[in-house]
Every structure is written in C-alpha cells, then in structure tokens.
Image (cartoon, rainbow, N blue to C red; front, side, top):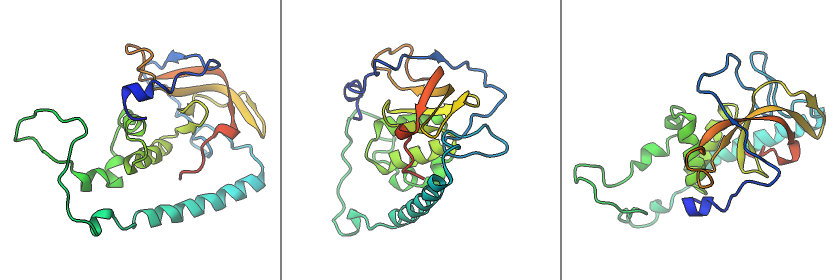
Length: 209
C-alpha cells in the first residue's frame, strides 16, 4: 500500500497498544542495533542466539551482499526500450520553472540516502512500496539501528538493554515508529516508547543487509 487509504488497511493489532511519544530531547544513550552488538552501543536484539544461528546469519549476510551487488548492476528496461515521457501519478499545476521530471539518477544514488533524516526514510519506506527507493530506505534505517517487525509492520530499536533474553525472544523497553496517521492524524507519524514489550525473534526481519 502506498496511499493514505491503502495504509489504513494496516491497522494496529489488538494486542499492540500505542506507547508514549518519544520526547523531543534525545536521550544520552544511543539505541542498540537489532541483530548486532558493539562495545559502544547497547546490545542488539537477538545477540543471544546460538553460534550455529550466528554462522547461518553470517552466510546469509554474505549471500545478500552478493545479491545486492548484482542488483546494482541489473540491466534496466530503458536500456532496450524507447524513451517514454514521464507521467506523474498525482498531477498538479506547478510553475513551468519547476522541474517537470524526477531526478531519477540522483534519487537512486545510495550515497544520497545516507544524508536523509529518519523521517524521510520512513516516508519512503511506507509510501514507495516495491521500489528501489524502499529498499534504500530500509537499508539506511538499519544503519540507524532500526529493525523491522514483520507482524506489526513497524520499525523498532532498543531504548535500553532488555530485561529478559532467551533464544526465542527478549523483553524490555523499545522505541518504535508509529506510522498510523490514518488512525490519528494529530498523534501519528511519531516515535513512541513501548515498555514491557516482548520482541519475538521469529518476527524479526533479517533478510535485508
């Protein structure tokens, strides 16, 4: 889904109530990275998994890196097709001096996405589904320590070290991005804090590098 009407279909699960909005003043600690741990950051969700799982994850990461490298060099349809005029999805009257076609060569440059704030990345992820831009947004969000929860269609990151960890889940306080502006136009599209949340590793998306 890419429109407000379509996004409304991704309603909140009954067992996932909204948390408190994250204060505008950042905390002194840096949120941890889900799936990875460093000495300078909080631990990562899933860092207590078995060594076998870690080995499999390493192989998976390598394979995905190779796929990513191959993806960047795929032939494009325009290489064999005649150039077609750009048609905007939602046309509007703008001054003729404004650009009338997207700067496609720029927006597809991964280096540009490294400069975007997380709000821009969230917008691209939720409103440009199935595109290379969504892939780049997801990749950058992971660089910012966010990880995707497949059940709730929501991005999470640790707010503090988990209180409980097992091979199957961990429980603690997390920051998540509430994209449900359709449910509450005034309070949605913000980062919230979820306390006593159980993050089941089976819902952790770890396919994308």
